[in-house]
Image 1: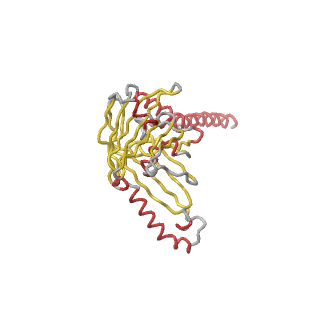
Image 2: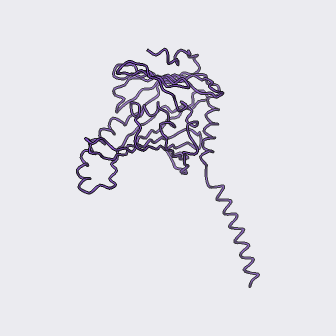
Image 3: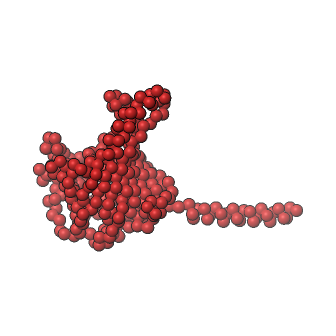
Length: 299
């Protein structure tokens, strides 16, 4: 009897070990593996691209106030690393707004005062994978986006990860620092390009707005990826904005009092914050001048 039990125990242990090691193999990606694959895919695509220009036009929402946006990119080497300087020219209510990222600083013209503003940049434009800090990033597993398997990453520094330009394109202005914020990325398992980006902000509104705690969610779906040379580019970005009221701690009476105001604010945000940006044209390796990316020459 003892011998039979011993054999059974050995079989159980062996099966357990097999299942354990199989589970490790099937456990999925880690944050670092996703970042590494994003880096490899990016570097392979951009290897022969010294500069490129993207022309875009928005429809719906706040983009009704804007015209075309032209973004210039030029490869540069800074502290031994390849990066892309950027210059973005946008038409807003008849005015041209220019923003420059020179690899170190972010330069803009204040539309109210006309003064040139300069601040240290804390992110790498275009190279999103460099902005992901594994310590501050969590791997959530796999999900399907538009019929494609994607790896999901969650992080607590969305403005740094997605870059100021992305945050501004979603909000139409430089984002303020809210009480709490976090972001989520859905990365394609095939191309290692982002398929969806989500920025969430939780903040308490002004007293005149009822002192409500609100959660704003801004989602960007990157669609219609096309190959331009070796580079993959999403020819359509669909933005949607929603607002929710955090009712934790509120009485039923307080919830009813603030419901009407919440509905009005939510409708306004979803209307202005939901739009589509289409790429009209992309030009690669045209020999862009360094002067385009010199913030000291902004007027």
